[in-house]
View 1 (tube, rainbow, N blue to C red):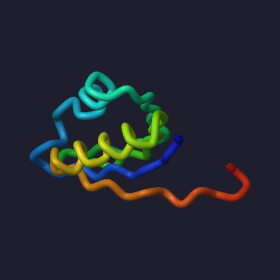
View 2: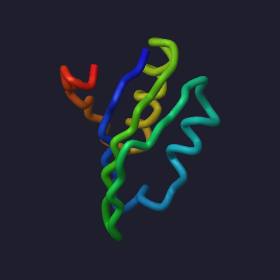
View 3: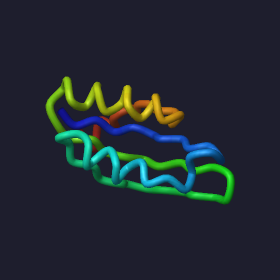
Length: 79
């Protein structure tokens, strides 16, 4: 399953290697599509690729790290 999501970081977790931890902890492939990181917040468009249950568990883990996760609507042209 491939899923694209926006991750929103806050000032408490902006400097933590959360995407690295995600790739180390779960059998998924992460692909950063875009990122905008400021001093007090960050927004990352991330593609997650893996088994459905693993991707869902990874998203729950992100949320437990106080990262807001929002699915990106898939563009019909993009597929």
